[in-house]
Amino acid sequence: MKKHLLLLALMLFATAPIHASETLIPLSDWELIGDGFTAPVDDAVLVSEYPGSTGVMLVSPHKYGNEVTVRFDIMPLNPETVLVAILAASNASEDASLGFPDNYDGSIVHLLEEVDSYFFAFHNAAHNRTPFVRKHPFIKGESQDLDVFDFNVMTTQWHHIDVTTTGRGAIDMKVDGETVLSAVDENPLPGGKVILRLRGTKTHTATALIRDLKIDED
View 1: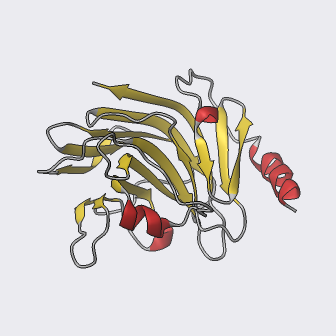
View 2 (view 1 turned 180 degrees about the vertical axis):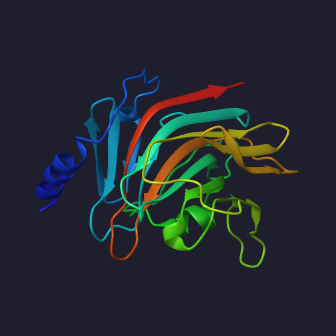
């Protein structure tokens, strides 16, 4: 069944408009976590859930310090695909390492409650939200949005994303060059791994194309 879904997804999306450009960091090196798959499509990578998934994500093989900018192009392939970028993800250890429980299914609860991170949600109208950034782990009654944008800016087209954290605590996200989220964390996280996460709805699985990933560390 899963093989049939993979073939169907490739047939549906292989004709999406892709523009040639250099990809500096291959997503093929990133760990896929959750019930889903990746597949190359021209100069991009297709990332998708399987039906019944609780979320799928790509985790960087390397950790980064707290002065980092992550840049990439992304195209959600249906309106129900919720997109999240996570920076400085670690298990609160001194070496900023990140691990997951055995048999972890990619669900959001572990990320919110057990992982230190800056959590940027930016194509999330399907969850009745506009873009926001939070600092985790989530502690009931204490976790709040660091910033929220007034309206949803992304569509099911290619968009360029820039996400930045600095050692001084500045945090921001740009979509197509426009700043949509900006905040200052007075107790900045020390750094960690980068995660790109997709999640669908009860009726639709999440699917997106990602290309031209670049990570600049100061």
